[in-house]
Structure formats: C-alpha cells, structure tokens
Length: 201
Image (cartoon, rainbow, N blue to C red; front, side, top):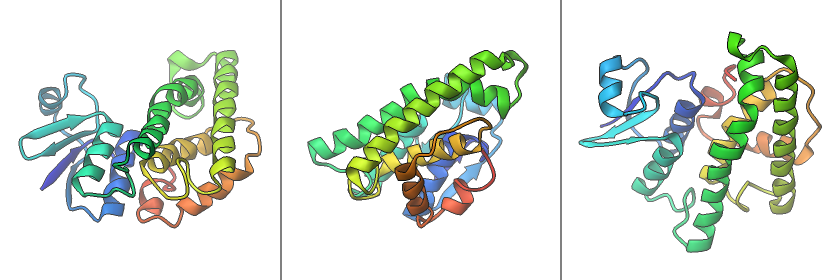
C-alpha cells in the first residue's frame, strides 16, 4: 500500500490527499512521522513524502504527477505534449510565483509568526498575491472552464488549494468572478470538502 507522511493541515499534504480521494486510492497516511524517519526519507526533512514500496518521492507537485500517471489518469495529466505542458506550466507557476507572493502575508496574518509582523511588508505581499490571482482569473476567463482548458486536471488541484488559502487570509481582495465560479465548480470534486474547504487555510 502507498504511504503518505505529513500532517493533514499542510497545504502540500492536502494536495495529495485531495488527489487520492479523487483517484479512490488506498493510502496509509501517517500524519506525524518520527523526525528520524522523515530525515531518512527526505533530505529536506519536509512533508509530504510518498512511499510506494521501495520508491520514495517528495515535493507535492511531483507526487501528484506520479500518482496521476501511476493511475493512468490522462484526464488529470495528459500524455500529449502540448496539453501536458500546459498543465505542468500552471503547476510550476503555483509552486514558484504564487507561493513566493503569499508567504509574508500568510505567515503574518494566519500563522501570526513573530518573524513576519511587519505590516507594510504583509500589505505588499498581499498586493502581489492579489495581482497573481488576477492572472489566474484572466486565464479562467479565457478557458471558461478549468485552469488548463475545459477539463479538471492536476493544475486545478494545486491551484484550488492556493485559492482556498487566498480566500482564508485576512485582507482586502478584488472581486474575481471567473475565479469564484471556478472555485464553485471545484466543490463538485470528490474530497473537496474534506481536504480543501475544511476550515484550514
């Protein structure tokens, strides 16, 4: 059986849990792996970590790609060159540009971490986050469906979690109608209530 290590409040663990719910995939989930085990599995000592027999994989977006391919779910991760590249483009954008934008304001206003209490920097972080969510809104206006086109893919999973975090972080946000309509469509996906809209930012 597959084993997943990492607390279910982690946004990156929740990506994997949501995907597994949609795949109806049996999974042993260990929320609090011993530190020595985590260090042995991942040199970064971070979660999530997936173990499939002797094979170990870390980085949440890579885990999602692996599981979709393992299940033969070409709807989630296409095999045609251009379609797959578009899905992976938005997954990489989530992991790089979008994650970099929200870090300061999220840590300040949700986690209330003492190293992030500069409110001017938090506002600047939120402004950049809002701008990038506007980019996503424009993409959804163009596709009139899901992030990478007319069907639900891994891009929607990773960006759905990021959008939930944006919605749950205090601060002024623009009205983004295409984003809002898309998020309502995501509610129909298996596992959404348990792993996305579950009260955790």
